Length: 339
Image (cartoon, rainbow, N blue to C red; front, side, top):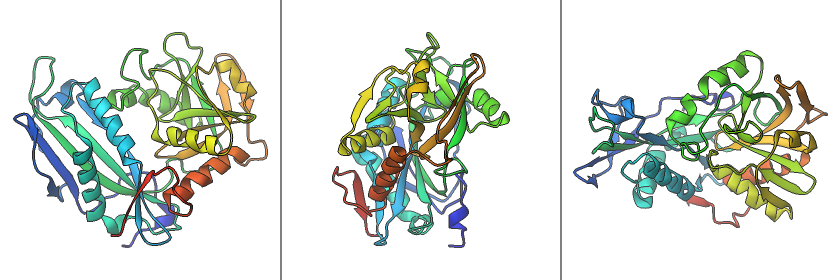
């Protein structure tokens, strides 16, 4: 495989195969292997008109022992099931999710970056309503599909502190909307404000709660966390997507003897944190160097020596060590394959 593994972007890279399964007549069919990068879809499909779609993101890693490790797929399966129920789609059970994901990874095993290159194989399961409807109602046919792509860091800086800005003139999700499930509408709602942040030199935007604009919501496409003394703090809100990475960091923080608080985090509390960061499957952890709030004039600086904070670093290294098989997986998070 002639790829520059060390300099892979976080983007789409053509691989050999994807795996598909169709839901028709009230049941799921058999797995189908395809080398096509396109989908033949009805012009009145509900995914195109009424947003009946959901997706997931997880990673496969090539370990030092040459084996492949898939990280916490059951959490992604459960989250997709929750998303499906949220927008009334056919549910992909654990068995179908697992078989499809593993088949897609195995068929494209040559695209799993070698150990030590700082890259991984990103796995994208997606579920879309393919049945034709003109009225606003659920489809009666669906497509579940998994494709993969080798990727580098989500932010080009990698595990380096970045600058972020607080967004007050856009809402990512309504308080009782779809923020807690992984559907495309949440991301479409963030595109303009994220572009504004990028155009102004920031890596991402930090969103506030839509009701009062008082509390931290999500951190771009990721969850927010802060370190205060020996406590790991992360926001609690119905409009925040439950991050598998954040859930894992919470357990690792407990392993380190830290306290964990999942609660509303007011903007004013930002100045009290020793370290802050964003976390998610794509970036793992992105330390935050500075936060600007142009509306209030608030300017906060972290990582004053230019390096990530010690606890963020410890959590990041511990999580990656488990994912790559360098340290024991005491939580039973990793499935190991010899292909």
